[in-house]
Image (cartoon, rainbow, N blue to C red; front, side, top):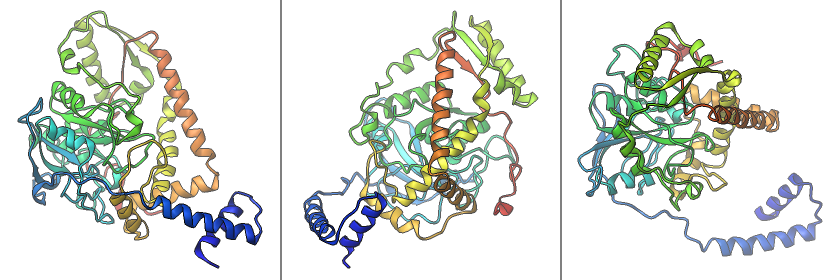
Length: 426
């Protein structure tokens, strides 16, 4: 039997549609005609200006995966040196996502990278990261762990480890990271810099290699709130390349609000998050709370009882979504992060290679099999929990203007303290 007849037969069986052999042949002919029509469309992605002076990073913290030069035009970011995480495309620079399994050099730049350059920033490199953004310490990059520039002997946090380290070490003025379940905020905390996770879909993700499309964000890490706000204003806003952003209002006027007073602000402190933190972390947060009280804010304790299950729900979402991404060659079948034929082709080559590190290998197998065995029920339950948690937090904002929690419940741990990566295989 021909390939198309077999495809029709399988699809009919999968969807419970009864077809005789004549109908199968007729559908095969129609599929041939449809393919011929659709294949006239051009799947390619427009090329961009290529970065120059591309070479592997060699800084003492292993913050950079590659160094390069992509000079900015004039604009509000003129004079700023910027790096982007190794899962964000920069034309002419190999993008590895922290994995030896990936062999991909884009000839186009991500929307956020182009916006940086268009507004004057110089893109000077890509930064190391936990493999496929699937860990939180900066230890699992296939090209070696990232060092913490401010806490010697401790991890920098991840997965945006190199971005935080590059900022903390003054190698760049600002860096872009990605955040799925803390991957900007955790390294920002451990390295003592500002990290901001924007509203979902506020920043276009075209040219970004997803981990979990329904949770992924791109955002800035910087030394100051003002620089982070300025960068967010630059990279955010709708883009036709990422249709999911088209209904989101762009963030404007952020820098104008930096330094304004907070007198009269009503702030809630989430008790469950404070109870879960170490004594030292709580002490630091309490110091910050006293500062905002002295500045005129009113503070009260608030409760989100269900927040303790948030990490479990994140696991139930990220695992299946990442497995599905690899099964579909990196293609998101929705108005999500935009589309790149070169990246899809690269993932198609990578998926069957098996060349993943232990963390990714284990989480990939577990996430895919749990989703298959439960027929998606665990994934649906996790997404429903996410909606309920969001609703609970929205209800809190009826009575407060802002919420305070520790960014991380612990200070930066030492290497191998989270667990011994060499013994992670089940």
